[in-house]
Length: 215
Figure 1 (cartoon, rainbow, N blue to C red):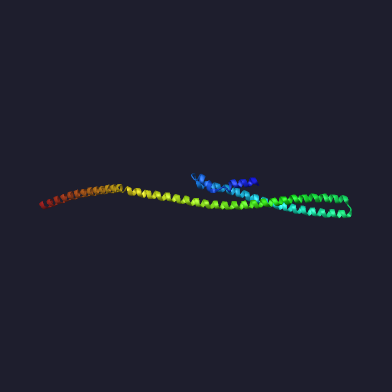
Figure 2: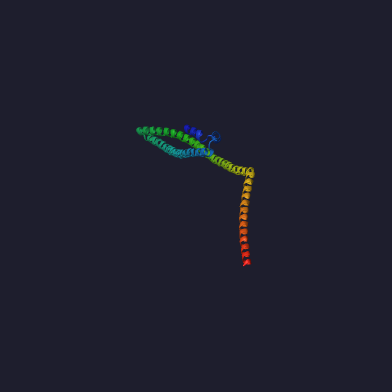
């Protein structure tokens, strides 16, 4: 049991804050999930040991009651044999009584020890479950901080892009001015070509009119 409690102390009941402080520079969520899985495995092992200890306690209790009954039975038989003058039977019953009474004493001590160990295991197991629950809550807190940090990074990226766009406003104005000039040039060219076509048509019409007048 000492080795078990030492293992519990070194693995499950370790201070979570200390673990996170030592490894915070790495990925705290991954480390915390791994640590929780390890603790859950240890907690499950202790739960099985508790079940086994309950079974052992029941076995000790049965053996203890049986030894008490047999010791009392042999004691009565020894008294009857003594009263009947059956010396050989009396000696056998007495020896058996002594054997069973010794077994009763040994089982009583073992049962007492089993009860103490069971109580200690139960206390440690409850402590482990509370610690595990606290670690699950701590994981949610860490995940919340991570989500806020990620969101803040995204927000800062968007804001930085907007600031960069504001600083580049003059550049955008230059581009817009260039497009305006280009559009004006296209419109002017179209207008000039349209005027030329209209003048040519007017000249043709005038020549036709003159020809008709002469004739």
